[in-house]
Image (cartoon, rainbow, N blue to C red; front, side, top):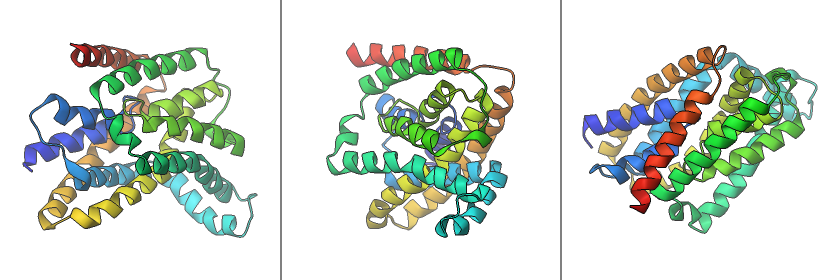
Length: 267
C-alpha cells in the first residue's frame, strides 16, 4: 500500500471517528468511489488503535478515574465515582457487542456496505441529530450520568453498526434527547467510544492474526500514528467549537453528502 493511500485512510478515520459524520461510512466510500483498493482488516484495526489512543489521551483524567475505579467495581462498590463510571461504560457497551456479534455471525454487516445504505443513513440520522439538538434541553451534565441513561445510550450506540449512521452522532443524539448539554453529550459519546473501539478492535484483531504479515504490520503502524494526530486535532476542534456552535454544520454536511450518494447509487 502506498504512503499516500495510508495517509488518506488515516486522516479520514482520524478526523471522522469523533465527528458525527460516520467514519465507517467514509472508509467504505473511499474504495467504492475511487480506484483505490479496499484497505483490509489490518489497516482498519490500526487506524482504530490510533483513534483509541487519541481519545484516551484527550480524556486522560476521566480514563484514569475509570481505571482507578475498576478495583472498587470488582468488589461491588458502586459508591466510588470511578467504579460507577467504569460500570456505566460497561453497561453502555453491552448492546453493541451483542448486536455486533449477531451481525458478524450472520454476515449482516457485509450486506449493508453499500453506497445506498450509507446515503440513506447519512440523511435519516442527520435529521435525527438536528431534531434532538434543537428540541433537547441542556439541563444535564456528564457527572449526572446514570445506569439507566448508560443503557439507553448503549442501545442508541448499537444502531451505529449500520454504516453511515455515525457512532458519535447517534450517541450525541441520544444524549441530547435525554437533556445533556452539547459539550457533555459529546463527552459521553467520546468516553463510550473507548470500550467500543477496544471491543471492535479485538474482534477484528482475531481475523487480523490469520492474515497479517510484516509489510501489513509496518503499514498499520504508520496508519495508526497518523490517525492518532488526526483524531486528536478533530477532538480539540469539535470540543472547543461546541461551546459556541450547535451541531447544525455537521447536519448540513450529512444531508449534502447523503443526497450526493443517493444520486450516485440510483443513477
